[in-house]
Image (cartoon, rainbow, N blue to C red; front, top):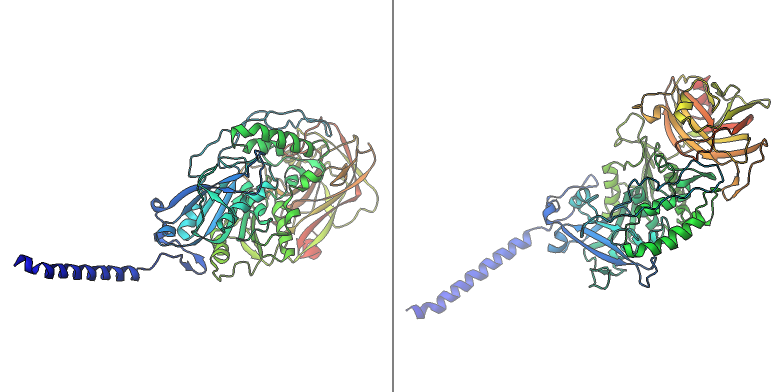
Length: 616
């Protein structure tokens, strides 16, 4: 009997198995795939994407179109990827947020003697400095963890890469050379299926970005914010949007100012070759050759610390000159009191993008270096340009500015920057600048001259807070009866003579009285700053001054948007060597200012009538 019922039992088992399989298939078909979720136009954290233990993390090398270490092989960039497991388990394709940097594998650190000694006469040969070596840090496959926890749970893949000649990326660092633009371009090309990826630095099996939608956004701060712009200037397809934060957009503007050798704030004596040494963390066997070709040849011949003039070397490292192919939408971010990468860096690129008709917006705050746009703003832009969400990104107010006392994530919208209601107003200094002279709307009718003596031992704060000094000229408006809103780029034109063939020229707009409290907000004291070399007839041409002969020097301050409160005074301070930024020649050079042909123009919201109402 058992044998007789075997076929029947087998049939029943098969029937039950098929029924169970069908039930399970039906359940699986009804289980929705994990997908990005949006609310009010913004990508939301998705629980299924948020388990870090299930993220897929791997690294690879992307082949570029250059050989910057001259070893006969195309350089490969080291790339790491972090993505939700659903990109494999469900075949989900997602857009990419990409961050690249020369810093990810370590830097030289603070090595005594690695900066240029700024105690030298103007126009003299700079004394040599030492060149430190970088010890590479970091372990595969993780290059960096930046941005991952923010964006992967919101439905993005985050990709990092090391710049040429840093970390495990091949090639040579060039600090603004063309390979630093083409390297991220190659990674974007790989993410879009147009470039080759491998699982090894040499040889290796092919790796493809099958999980990418082909839409890429880039962001980063400082040097890491420069490189998104560098990539965008190549016009690479697939790079839809960039959000540079405090980017260095011109190495000339970073290390020079209107013909003057000027250090970035906080890094007195740094120059482009110092930065090269600082980031050169790549293959130790390639470093000597890279140093000889790049640092000790191209940079040494091009950087010109004697005259500070603009030349072809600096022009090739100015991204404003390379923007014609750019197509990516631009959300720019910067601090008005960033005296490292100064606020002109962002504005000059924003202004060009605006003139090119690119989608553009700018976010400014009142603090120092760094400071991204609020998360909701970045989310809005990435959601729109990478996921295609119709949320108004890039439309409406073009300028978002954090007012002086507001939280950094609560900017005020304006139609544009500068404020369209701002107009340039001319102010004139009058005799008395060794004490505090008058600064007002009335022009000087006769020639009048005042003198100052250069001495770098007196800092700008010392000079601005002093009631009297022979080392600066200070002119101030009457105390403001009502607040004055400055928006845009102030300009100064100074007629001066020097007792020597070369002299530093520094000018500050300050809010008086100076607040000596070390914890005082910088906006209590500094409105904006500017520096220039009186020897320069243009950025590319300079000649020694004839002692005692007058020259006219006109230059811009850094752009600003600041509300000067009622009760304060707007002050113009003219001095020579700036201890925090310029070279420090021996004290004693005499500078004479002709006030009749010295004028300050400031962009005032409401124009001359608004300023008159405040100071008259």
